[in-house]
Amino acid sequence: MAGTVAAGGRRPQRVSMQEHMAIDVSPGPIRPIHLISDYFPHFYPFAEPSLCTGDLHPAVAPTIPSAPQPQSDCQPEGDSDDSTALGTLKFTLLFDADNSALHCTAHCAKVRMGAGSLGQGAGPQAYPIPTVCPQGLKSPASGSVDTYVKANLLPGPSKASQLRTRTVRGTRGPIWEETLTYHGFTRQDAGHKTLRLCVCEDPRLRRRWRAPPLGELRVPLRKLVPNRARSFDICLEKWRLTKRPKSLDTTRGMSLYEEEVEAEVAGEERGRILLSLCYSSQQGGLLVGVLRCAHLAPMDANGYSDPFVRLFLHPNSGKKSKYKTSVRKKTLNPEFNEEFFYAGPREDLAQKTLLVSVWDYDLGTANDFIGGVQLNSCASGERLRHWRECLGHSDHRLELWHLLDGTPPQLSN
View 1 (cartoon, one colour):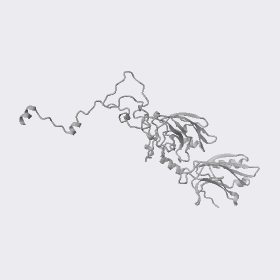
View 2 (cartoon, one colour; view 1 turned 30 degrees about the vertical axis):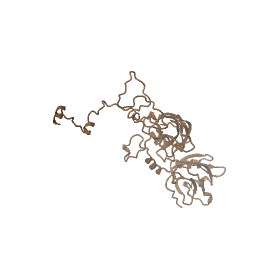
View 3 (cartoon, rainbow, N blue to C red; view 1 turned 45 degrees about the horizontal axis):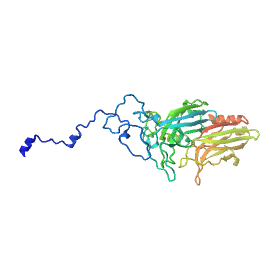
View 4 (tube, rainbow, N blue to C red; view 1 turned 90 degrees about the horizontal axis):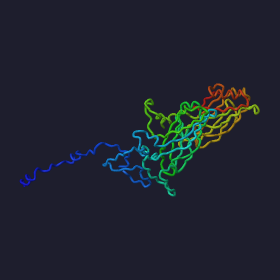
């Protein structure tokens, strides 16, 4: 045995598994991976074949073409936000200063592949994820979505300022041509508010859960010129939901307008009401019109209110001094268009106070106070101007918006 070992030479050296894995494992220079899904393919029943061609094995180096070729849409922009990969939205804004209204007309959009709600953060060539449809409904075509536009005014209560268009089904190039109107929008609102537009996928026929928006954009309204329309064609950005930072000075970009900030501002602003006042010389009294309310504070557990308006002329006795409107169910932007009459000469009315309060109707329990307005000769600002111009000019109807106070009025006897 000894001679055999000597004749054969030295014994083969044993190498441990740890040493074996540490030797000759470098394949060469590190090359960028353009699409990680090419190296780890998955099977999706509704997925279309990938448009990117080439060898899918990482061990073989890709060949370099002789002539430069244009980049396809399947290559992301590195560390960029890929805003153009989500699509674009065309819309028009008009601030009607005479009628205190903001008109937003949603024209059309282009939603790119990979901008789906479940593919947030993926590249523009992300595989479409199969959806589960209810029984009796056909499965949606690959690459098509059912989209609508949702608008919000920030900061402010989310449901009070939330408007949406109709849903356009089965396309990635939807055309709406629909106008969303915010009533009670003043010059002060234009100075500090921002309009957020989200392109959302309607989940009613696709999924049972609520999907995040496909993309969003935000427009500071201080840039609008009153009574002049302005058109926009802006790229959609990724929708991000982050927690509110402790210090607002350290925030970046639009992170100031988060849901927690909106909830905080919603508690401060109670809403606004549009009133019309006119002293009728023929009837010999004051005509008070309750037209509509906007951006009311939600008082019910479902995030809405059942508002109605009470009117009271103080001091005055009798049932003719108290009126109330009908109840509007489950809304934060009710429209009343009701008018009431208070008889009396202008000299007597000038010494009185008109109390206008908005309440939330509750069946079987006490009604909740939302906000109120007092109009008299001791008021200030727009309230004083509204009261004086009404009593100073006969047969002249004046409509003005008034912010609601969060504290109930305290009147002396």
